[in-house]
Image (cartoon, rainbow, N blue to C red; front, top):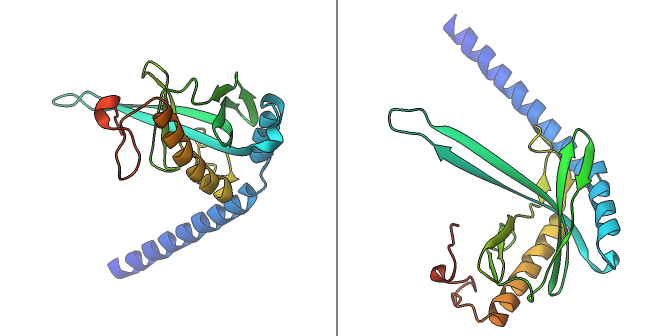
Amino acid sequence: METKYIIYGIIVLVVLFVIVYIKACIDEKKGIDSEEKKQINDIIQKTVPDAESFTPAYAHWKITNYTGGGRTSINTTTRYWYYAIAFKTSMLYVIPLSFDGGDISYGEPMCLTKENVGIVDSDSYAWATFYDLEKKEILTLTVSPSNLKGDKYEPVNIQQKEAAEAFGVFIKEFMAEVNAYHNVPVKEKNGRPIGKSINIKK
């Protein structure tokens, strides 16, 4: 009897895996030319001057804070940020996004250049943090090749492998340009700023 239940359990797990896998494949295919991708590109066209000369992409970031511990339970709080970005040599536009159902709203675009960014810290397209001229963090973001829609905190289906690869090249060059312009001490191995220059938490 126990063997029968074990077999049933395995069958259920296999079926669930297949369903999840098929859904992921469908979402990934939709993400190549999804409605969210079109909306974000439209926002970039509206807000970025000479937008055709930039590479557009979707970016995001999240931070989870843990409080409590010891004899009390641990509480977690996670904050999320979403962006449309557009980049080309020596220039990055960042447009804050918010999601309400199927609608995408956007805020005032920020134009980041070596003149108004004091330090850039990055690990390829995995993440990039930008600091102002007073070494205060402006924002952090990541450009993921694959973004699949999940709960309300994962609001888009966007596949952008080429854009993510292009951002990896861009951010490496932008980090070198900004940090050299402001004489920021960097590590020889990867060009990242030395920890004592800024309060690096990564």
